[in-house]
Image (cartoon, rainbow, N blue to C red; front, side, top):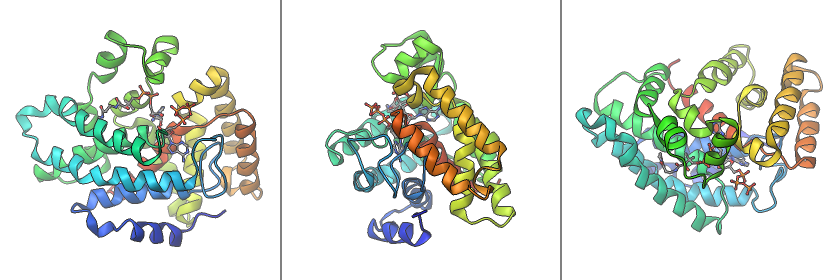
Length: 297
Ligand SMILES: CC(C)(COP(=O)(O)OP(=O)(O)OC[C@H]1O[C@@H](n2cnc3c(N)ncnc32)[C@H](O)[C@@H]1O)[C@@H](O)C(=O)NCCC(=O)NCCS
Ligand SMILES: Nc1ncnc2c1ncn2[C@@H]1O[C@H](COP(=O)(O)OP(=O)(O)OP(=O)(O)O)[C@@H](O)[C@H]1O
C-alpha cells in the first residue's frame, strides 16, 4: 500500500490549500487527493498503477485536481448567493460553472476525462453547503444530503427519462438499462454513500483502523453495491455484475480486515485490468464518503 497521509499533505501543500477562501473547498480538494492516492483501488488510477486506463496516470490526476479546484470557491459562492426564493433554479444556475470547470479539466489533461463525475458531485455539494451556510443552518450529513436531494429533484426525469439526447454514455445507459448514474446518486442525496460506505467508514474508524484502511473497506462495499455506469459502459451489465459479485465475496471474507485482505485487493485490481473495467463512479463516491465524514453524522 503506497497511499500515505504524508503524501496527501505534501500534495495539498503544493496545491496551496490556503488559496481557498472557503473551508469546504479545502475539504473537497483533499477528498480528491485522498481518492487518487488511495491504493490499491481495483481498476482505477492510484499510486500503484494506472488501473485499466491507458490515457491517464497519477500525474494527470494531480494536474486535473490543480485545474478544477480553482472553481471550488465559485461553486460555494454560487450557493451562498442563491436566494431561498430561487432554490428551484439551483441546477440551471450552477450548470455553466460546472461546464467551465469541465473545460478546465480537459485543458489540463489534454482532453482526458479524469473528473467529470467528481466535478458534478463536488460542484453540487459545495453549492449546497454555500447555500446552507448563508442561511446559517447547522451543517450535518443529513441536512447537506437532504438539501442536495431537494435541489436535484427531477434531474433524472428531466435529463434522462423525458428528454434524452443519447449523447453521453450516461444518457445512453439510461435508455438501454434504466441506470441513472451520477444524476441518480445526486437526486437520492447520495443514498449509496449514506447507507453503505459512510457507515462502514465510521465503523472502521471506531474499531481503531486508520483512515486508509477504513477507506479501502468502504471502497470494497461500494464496489459490491454501487450501480456504476462506468463499469457498464466498458463491460456491459456482465462487467458490473462481475465486479459486484467479486466484491461481495471479498466483503464476506472480511474485506481488508482479512489476513490476506491487501493481496485480495491487488488480485481484484489485476482481474479488472485484464477485463478493462474501471469503477469510476465508485471512485467519485469514495471521495464523497471522506468529504461527508468531515461533517457531523
Ligand atoms: C451529469 C454529468 C456527470 C453527465 O455525465 P453522463 O451523462 O456521462 O453520466 P454518467 O451517469 O455516466 O456519469 C458520468 C460520471 O459520473 C460518475 N458515475 C457513474 N456512475 C455513478 C454512480 N452510480 N454514482 C456516482 N457517480 C457515478 C462516473 O465518474 C462517470 O464517469 C455531468 O457531466 C453534467 O451534466 N455536466 C454538466 C454540468 C452540470 O450540470 N453541472 C452541475 C453541477 S457542477
Ligand atoms: N482514480 C480514478 N481512476 C479512474 N477514474 C476515476 C478515478 N477517480 C474518478 N474517476 C472517474 O471516472 C471517470 C472516468 O472514467 P472512464 O475513463 O472510464 O470514462 P470515459 O472517459 O467516459 O470512458 P473511456 O475511457 O472508456 O472512453 C471520471 O468521470 C472520473 O470522475
